[in-house]
Image 1: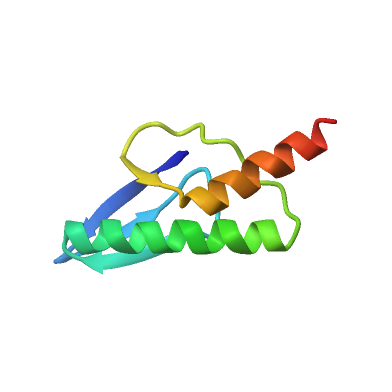
Image 2 (image 1 turned 45 degrees about the vertical axis):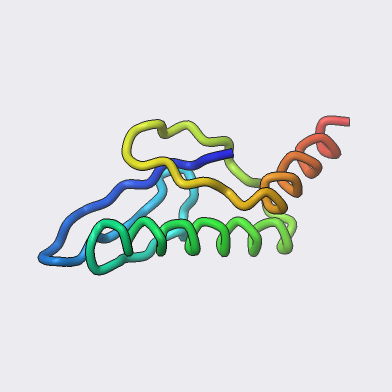
Length: 86
């Protein structure tokens, strides 16, 4: 499961945001660091949303840079959706 992020260059830094995951924002010094921080931010906010019982939006934005969701978080999202659809 992946969500795509948007990188916006500002000097030597890159700001990161996820159109499909409000609140998942970060930044990094250089593109490689920004993408690493994007991975951390995405997984942290998704884990928090799952623990809070909130609905997780399906990925709909497919431009930008794909960021992989950790397997345990992807499984939790899948199980929650399966439970809701019963």
